[in-house]
Length: 58
Image (cartoon, rainbow, N blue to C red; front, top):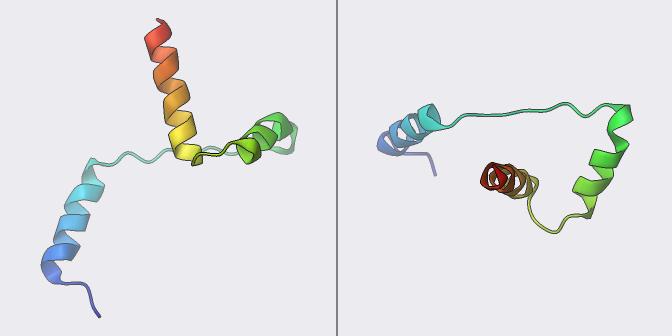
């Protein structure tokens, strides 16, 4: 089943509103890699929660 043209346009419009963030973890970042492997929630959710907690502390 192919994607309808209207769905394709809607997805493209939504992607314009999204900001993508990428990080590189080097071999020296094993503590971060280990922590991310231990968490029970998606990495994105975890990182967003940490940032929001940091914002609320200020």
